[in-house]
Length: 237
Image 1 (cartoon, helix red, strand yellow):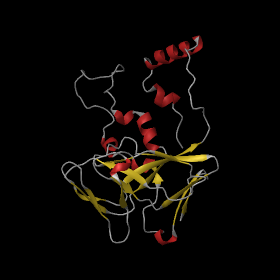
Image 2 (cartoon, rainbow, N blue to C red):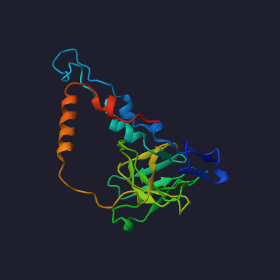
Image 3 (spheres, rainbow, N blue to C red):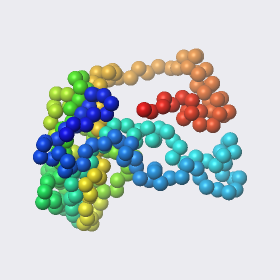
Image 4 (tube, one colour):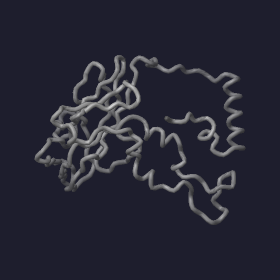
């Protein structure tokens, strides 16, 4: 199975024995954080006390395009099968009961991270391959606030290492005894072009023109609602 998204910068493929049986990576916009999707676009209030400077009901985070854009960036790699996790009261013991058909959780020794308990390792059966000069950044799904676990971030040169990459994670929830379901978002994979920017930023004071540009934008924001979202933000494809 081979999946492309409009270009050949990044691709995902699995062993033939897993084709059609494990959930594939999907564009991250298909796994927008549930709390964000449930939000109303504005704060409900019949009085005039809670209005924005334009007289409209104040927006919630649902109207914040930077939040949506970061949650839509990259590709979500999901948990490959249902697995039962058991933890005790102080998280000194964490166990996993894998399904009979596929091992999806193992553990790293606690000594590797100097923790009180072993770190969970989510096993990934998808190979990530990128075009020459491109690496893959793996981060927890943006703004998901999962109460149970957080996968550690990592950067892999997937053009030179086209092999399965597993995801270590820290378990947060004590006294847990339940299932994580197949398809649960684990990480977001974002292709990154190596050496496309310097390691150190350029730091300086703003120019007169930049000061005037900021002043002009500030004035426009006081006259036109949603100036960034409607006029400055580049439409996403």
